[in-house]
Length: 227
Ligand code: ADP
Ligand code: ADP
Image: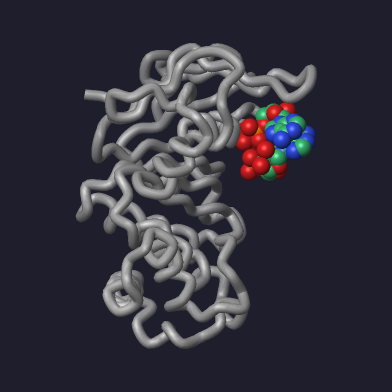
């Protein structure tokens, strides 16, 4: 019952192979950590699973549909409606308030203002940000900004949240708290989470981890490397 699956995907940048026949399968509701050395292909794998990059060869399937062969319009529609994203630097709009940033994906999806801001406020509460809705995001601490990014990623009710080093810019205590919030909320919502991380403590909060090395996926359990 895989929700998201990549089969034998390869992707090069010029002459640099980033992925070499990588395969991974993620079940609905699962929290998967992707670990591995810098430059091993983790981000490229995440981007291929999320339909941001298309692989040069191989297949990506989401919910019974071929994702990699969809046209650009359908792929971006799918990303907007079914996926949420959290990156290392939250990519918030600094000129907008916290509430505006969280409501934005709903407003772009044509939710009316009032329900959009009501849902944003409720997600801000759940991320321990109640009361900060009127602040500019530029005034926030790193941990607060990442929690806003998580609220924004979850507000549309996505099936899958993709996170690329979401705690990479935070100190380890703050990072752990941010991950606990993300994973806890995702579990409450039944949302699948795929997180790229260097941090073993972040990976320890996942249901399963895979390791990417030289563009290939290793299952640490299959190869006997168990944390
Ligand atoms: P990781 O996330 O594990 O650090 P990446 O997926 O970012 O690895 O990168 C894998 C390889 O592909 C690296 O050699 C990297 O330099 C290269 N690469 C990734 N993205 C690009 C890009 N946009 N242009 C050129 N090379 C890239
Ligand atoms: P990470 O290790 O967290 O993946 P990177 O610094 O490798 O971060 O990559 C950050 C961004 O830069 C990614 O979007 C990746 O695709 C791009 N990138 C990585 N390597 C290269 C490269 N050699 N040339 C151009 N873009 C790259």
